[in-house]
Length: 111
Image 1: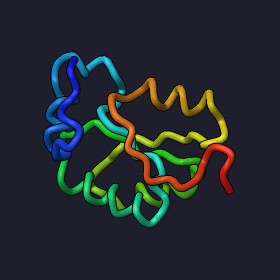
Image 2 (image 1 turned 60 degrees about the vertical axis):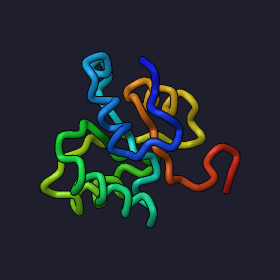
Image 3 (image 1 turned 60 degrees about the horizontal axis):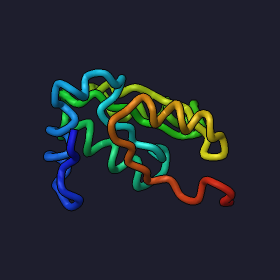
């Protein structure tokens, strides 16, 4: 399944992930870092602009993710908890989706 051009608009990426071949993954898109300022803005944009998208918010703190989820109603994205220092958790997250968008700061070895 060829990926859209590098500078394709988000709607082209979403359309690409809605192709029949993409149905095998739990999510079409995961937004990692959704609890930060930029991640929160991106989550609200996705919730408003792509109601049919199978997506999830992700980050290391489940409680903060639940708070973000409350701000996205009526959208109901999935919630994935994955600490940036936990390679196995990151691998599981990546395996469950077609696309990961990250707004997280320094995560691997960062502060």
